[in-house]
Picture 1 (spheres, rainbow, N blue to C red):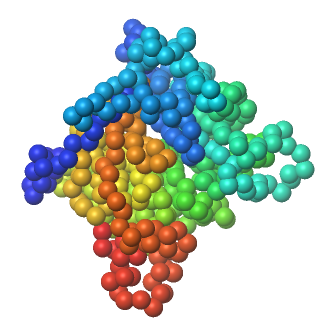
Picture 2: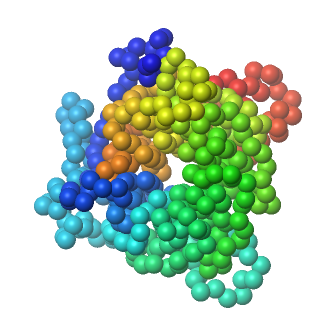
Picture 3: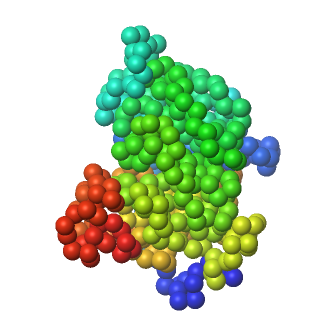
Length: 427
């Protein structure tokens, strides 16, 4: 079996440009479990990059400083100036990068247990808490507040102030590993945690972290969750082929999406909310219309296409992570075949590929120019994303789909080809 269809020559696929990496110090115990970088995350305002580098440690680094240390050599070759060893000699004090004037500071946080999930939360744009009792709160989050939530192996969730590195809240209710965390993008500081205890829990940080509701429905581990851009829908995925969509205004289950043949481990909405990408151990990424519960595109990582029985087993093409680019036109995926793939939603073959051993997770930077990928050895690798100018039609489509569902688009009195374009049926 092959990583690409017969119609695609691997030599014709573009090579992703590697631009740098963040390494962790090597020690004898690093050969044991617990060193994995399970999660990487970018602050929504582009100020910080965070990753779980293993052994309870989370690193918070100003993203602007990372970019300055990524340099592209003559002839287009990437040079790495960002390994901690290099910085410890050139531009650091006690292992910490020295900030310039008025630049955010780097922080190394000991979370007390293995970190599985990370998420940045911001109260911008400002939105009121959903809690009725808001007469008094321990914390008053201002518009410049930036928080980091960490999900731990012991079931706890710790909330940190990004700018100071101080612990603010300790949320305790899960009974197993907190595998993933996600904040509502509307600035409400509503946090959803996904756990191996088969539940999702909704927390209101503007109400001092009180738990709003437990979302029941998964019969097995919950691996990941993601909000739609308008915060109205939550997607959660997990073991047993599960893909659930939740109404976050009513906090109820809307529908289940059926199509995967193995555990589903990663999910993310497109920036306009019109598409949903899910990654599974069945060797595929499926792009859905979340409003109609229909499959629009399948991105295969093993050819010929495996049977459901083979895809449902321990094949060597498990897709570990998927991420949508902020431009709404590109998707990145990480698989066990030691490749990272950059896809265009307009093509069924990768636009570019890069070599990555033992990849676990990936995320695009806020501006979409860089992809970060975490690995089993706790390191993070960075690639420059494929660049192209979006068409005016695509920009208009995204603007429209941010405010209209598929059903609303279908009621418009416009030609059928335009209907198909606006509802992404032509991808």
